[in-house]
Amino acid sequence: MKTFMQIVDATAKTITEIMPWDLEEKLESETKPLLVDIREPYEYDAMHIKNSLLVPRGILETACEFNYEETIPKLADARTQEVIVICRSGNRSVLAAAMMQELGYNNVASLKTGLRGWNDYEQALVDNNNNAVDIDAADDYFRAKLSPEQER
Image (cartoon, rainbow, N blue to C red):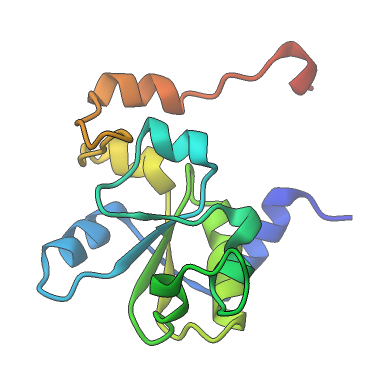
């Protein structure tokens, strides 16, 4: 049996990961990548990178293809476009990027460190109303909050 992190670490060797400063540079270029945020809707609503596309991990595969209720045409048409997959800490996005590669996306990468690292790098985040999120509020949001039953 493998742990979640063992699976993430093994999968990370099969994909491209970029750091927040690399993404910042890409977003300043003329040809911007498609940002795919795979977190849950409540996470996205709290804060996300402006202009990122919400595609919860649970529907990613069907959102990437046509003829499904979950199809997101902008994503399904992006197989040759540069795509950056984003999550909270850069773990779920590793698995999602690997799956997208399997689905034929040939220029996909995961944001290493996720939005936590993006915030640590002091890059802008917005809420669901496109209002800027205070960096200290984001720090607090991203801080782990495990209950006693979740810890061992």
